[in-house]
Length: 151
Image (cartoon, rainbow, N blue to C red; front, side, top):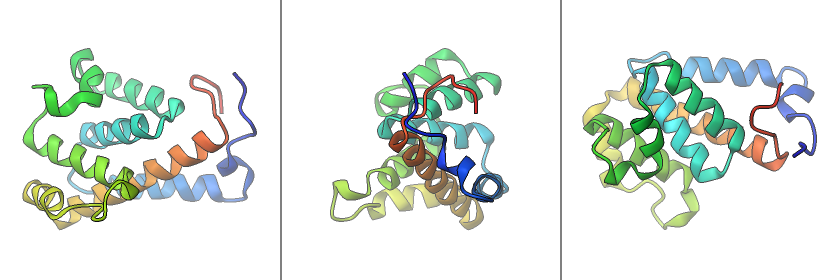
């Protein structure tokens, strides 16, 4: 496999620096790093971004997550491995990633469940984090970045 081109964030001046800064800022609230990695992995699975699926699976491993939890992210609704707060974050990630799949992209029940587990700052952190991983997914998928490749 070969990428179509170098990742655009590496070509456009200051883009990589800006995107990395946004990603870092998005994780500054009181949301566990594992929760961010879980939503990143789920959005990346939905978007078919092999680079991000690989990266976020490895990130979860480094955080000490079990294979059962990592492997079950794609089927989180049917797996017993996730807390209610993680489930709320994963549902929010799925809704935000699949915006065009329904007339109400993020239904009130999904939003309200997330808001039940996360205060406004943490919820803002999750929204920014999910939006940012979706941006990376689109850059990587469009240019066919290869999982395991060196950037």
